[in-house]
Length: 397
Ligand SMILES: Cc1cc2nc3c(=O)[nH]c(=O)nc-3n(C[C@H](O)[C@H](O)[C@H](O)COP(=O)(O)OP(=O)(O)OC[C@H]3O[C@@H](n4cnc5c(N)ncnc54)[C@H](O)[C@@H]3O)c2cc1C
Image (tube, rainbow, N blue to C red):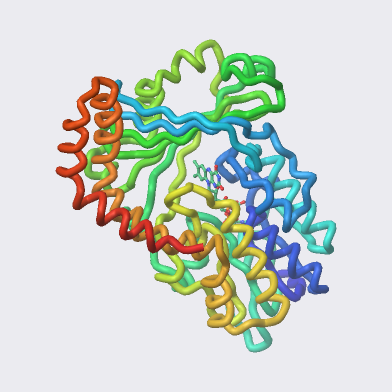
């Protein structure tokens, strides 16, 4: 079997992988990036909302944005009872992952990294001189490896760097993308221009307590829903049924009527990870979803993946001890915020359902002038609110 040599090998062309490859290649390393999909982004659930500055400061500002998000909607829904907040925003954009991942990967290539696709990494072996990366197309000799393999980190788990994901630590999501002409997206969403976008974040209760979203792309609308995997298993609730219920509850069927379903996907989001698992062992560094760096409060995974990828790129280039790598991760503001949000989210998963009932009820009582009723509701729930506020005060930047 043919063996080739590189200073560093990066597994995955997601945001974490491309960021680490870009940084390491810029520092002069001979870097190989390996992606199992036919092209970057083809294996990733299709699209997302990004914070433009978090991406721009690493990869440049020519981001292939689908739409600039101009309006952000927060919906708290308990059946027919809802609270809707709607406000203008800036600095946010929507991206399609095929174009976005290909763009990030091209930036790593422009910095000197070599990217190969249609190749799966099947194992990592220590040798006397370094590390052997095993793939379904041959072996690569290298000194350092970044595992940016996403939410199902088989290699990281097989190396025992992190434990298997358990239902307690994961959110099951389902997503659908509906195609329509660009002007139709603009019209149906009531937007002012074909480049403007809208994003929804929804907290709701159906068979389980869950969260959902709506994103506008250039020529499509994406919707998604997610719920704690443990409660989905307990209630035998399937992802495809969850997304049907979500559409029904939010009245989305009407919004999407007459359009064609372009994509359905179901994926897990890890809700725990580093620092409860290691982020590296000698010369092997984990980044992004592989160590569970999705912010469970804001659902941002791309920013923290890029931030950890940049740190991994520096670690690879300078041969950091794994402890130095982990310390650097802990000091990054985005990653700090992910870690410090987890406690609150764990608690909200047990108490959050209460707010979904409470907030619309408070608004209803306010509308009917029942201020004493609001006082009663708040005092009945004061202990829960206080506990949650205490954890909110621990969220760090
Ligand atoms: C439904 C849903 C909606 C989301 N919405 C948002 C959002 O709006 N905003 C946001 O910021 N985040 C969002 N996220 C989270 C975000 O997608 C992830 O946090 C982010 O993609 C993580 O980046 P990554 O580089 O760690 O992993 P990934 O993007 O998953 O990339 C991993 C790559 O590694 C490749 N790979 C894996 N194993 C191998 C192997 N053995 N050999 C070769 N290649 C391999 C994969 O094919 C993939 O291309 C969402 C997630 C889901 C599931």
